[in-house]
Image 1: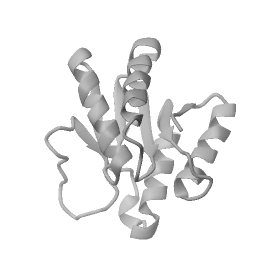
Image 2: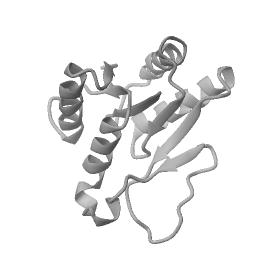
Image 3: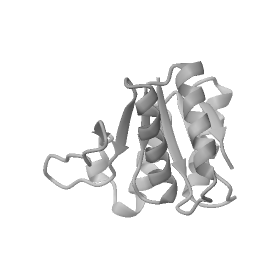
Image 4: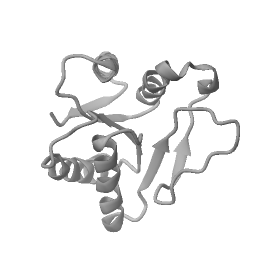
Length: 146
């Protein structure tokens, strides 16, 4: 089971406790074994840190970094990630559309979406709305921490 995590670039400090609780619940109640996160803002950094903490209690967890841009050479993630995902076809996506396309790919290929979406506009909102349509069909389960 895979959980994709997205959120605002700027988040309140007290969100970390909610992330810790949600991750613990996903692991123990739903059997999630892999968490996928980007690396472009406070939410991504906080979410990755929460998963690293959970890995101490659940050694089998996997933290995967979502890559967006094609560099033309093999890419290694930072040492504190267990692996990377580079969605197929991303090398042909313009840089300005890369985040939306990669997020869409992850929503389509994840069992759960853990998000912090307090705004009513932006690309993240589009992705969450798409995930809600998939949730109605039983293809993904969403938890919004906002």
